[in-house]
Structures are given as structure tokens and as C-alpha cells.
Length: 266
Image 1: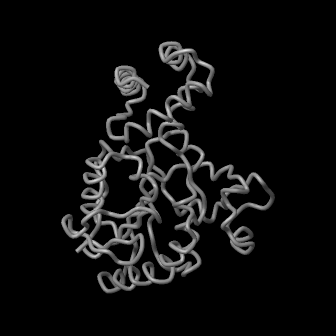
Image 2: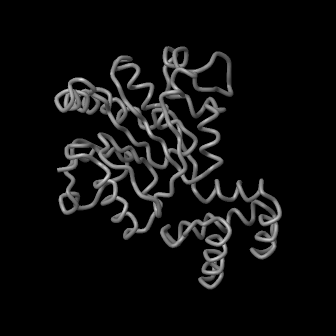
């Protein structure tokens, strides 16, 4: 793709979708855009932009594609096990020390996509102790993804494959595929539209979970986001990132490693 064409696409996407592609890695995004144009049978971008201005369903499909909604329950199971065995008990202990009368954990799932990540959090917290108090805020920029999350699905067999038979029985509605999360778990999560690049971040979080989202952004944007995640945490709070993600020079931004995929605010 010629750079002039890419600049034209970025400008038009910003006008139509309010999505700034300058924050994404150029070569990766160019490949995705080339693939999308071919897949949809448009001869050029002018033709395709005319189409999405007329067809709201196609506009939503394009937004979904650009915001990369790939997710599954208990993705990288060993990391979630570490969260359950080590991180969550420590956070609850600290919450009880700070406020014995109301030891509530405040958790933010940032870039939650279609919902498996915050629902995984709710399942873990229910399994650890149904009596522990917690608030899970789940946010994403993609309205279509959020709508699916709020509707508790549907989820494919592949998306729920890491759930045990017991978990499926406890936390999913009977039947399927497709699968739907039970109301018991869904009511524990509050979903909200949020743009990581523009909107204010919540504050005083005990745990911020943002996995396999920041990897798509440029180095400069990554640095900005990691600093904003740090600011969103209380002192001693934990940032949980993807299995292949590493926060570069965490000590320079007030974080320290706390096991693979976990960073503590110091």
C-alpha cells in the first residue's frame, strides 16, 4: 500500500469512525486494510467508503475488524491460575487491612472486547469466594463488541474451550454451542464504552487487566498507555498484561515486575 493511500484511509477512518490509526503500527495495519478490501470485493477505497457511509451494518463490521476483537475465556490458562492463586488473595488481604468493614476490590478490564476476559475475572472471584466483595468495570471502544458482551454471548465452542466441565456447568447456560454466560456471572460485570486513547482512566484500581491490546500500538502510544495504567492503580495495585507482553523499563514509570505478566505500582 502506498503511503499516500494509507494517509487518505487514516483521515477518512478518523472522520467516519472517530478512530485514530496513527496510534497503530503502520505495516501491520496496512496488511489488515489490504486484506479487508480484497475480502469485501471493493475495487478501491473510495468505493468502499461510499458503501459504509450508506450501510450501518457494514460500518459496524469495519469498526469491529479494525479494533481487533479476538478473545476467549481463560486465554493463557497458566497466567489466570497465577492470578487466582497468588494475586487475588494478596489483593483481598490488603483490601481487608485498608477497610475491614468494606474490603471491596476495584477491578478494571480495559479493552474487554466481546466479554470473555471480565467474565473470566468474575468466574475466578466467584470460585475464590462468593462472599468477597468486588466491582468489575469492563470497557471497550467497540459498540458492537460491548453489545455482545452485555448480551452474555453468544460464544463459540473454541472461545469457551479452556473452561472445565465444572465451570461450564456452573457459569454457562445449559445447551450450546453457541454458549451464553449465566446471569449469575453477568450481573457482576458493568460494561461501559471507553476509548483508551482519548477518554479519562478510572482511578484507585486494585487490579487493571489489559491483555493483548497494547501490542497493536506504536512504541510511543504504548508508553503513554502504560503510564496511564500506572496512574489508574492505587499504590500496590497490579497491572495484568498478555502472556507475550513486556512493559519496557517498568521502573522508569513506577512499576515493578511481580511475576510473568504482572506489574505492581510502587
